[in-house]
Image 1 (cartoon, rainbow, N blue to C red):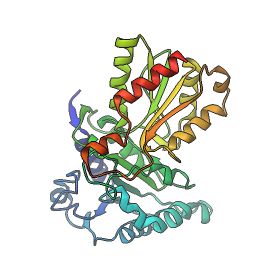
Image 2 (image 1 turned 180 degrees about the vertical axis):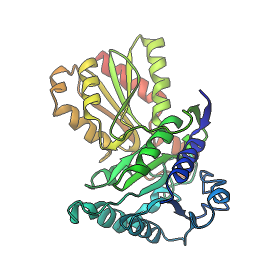
Image 3 (image 1 turned 60 degrees about the horizontal axis):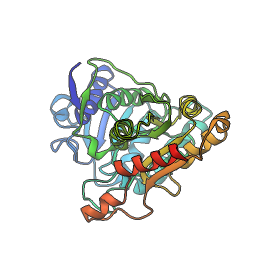
Length: 327
């Protein structure tokens, strides 16, 4: 199978959907001539023109508000927010309007919109450009939250999100844009709400997503080679809707669970994952308490050394996994 970068896979998904459906269009800051802050929409203006690749003012409230209006009146907008941190400027439009419209209109209104936003640390962009805010939005009924970890999932999940009749927040981990992997050609859909088991194991389940996935897969290889620990690695892929069945089944199988995410640990989505397992019959199969390994409860520092210390790393995953298995 041919290989694409994560960014190329996202671009291909949008391009194919715009060719298939004239109601799909892009909007956002610098997405046309410049090709987006991370180059994801490069070349799309030349194919689709300024009517369907719409440059917007520097106003996240206007971008998301206009997208919600366009969606509820029949279009399928893909709105790009330059950094996920700036979603705070559009919280009313996304959380109080887009997420609630379908419910408040008794299902007669559809809001088929996707809000794409780069998230996460690792680029040295500091506290206002490097947050991982997914947990904020998982608390909002009516809003779907997607975080692809591989190029194939980037294409397949974005295609599914564009075709969904509900608002979808699509968070893209910035350090993944240049990563490569096999991506199917042509139409490719990964259904929302279906987790992926990237590595099977028997001793411990590691649940993770986003840019933590490749790091946890490397940690799992080292756990096997150095300690003889067999780790199963599960990626939810979509936090809302959540594939609880796959997560619970893996926890029952191994009896030990380590949850890893880049976002701050306090109030992070790892707490929800832990609760899902603790409230299921998997609880009675656990051989050790569920353990979380999240980012430090600090703003992301500008210093590269401090920035790296603020989020989970491979050695930390290995250490905690070994402690769980030996407990």
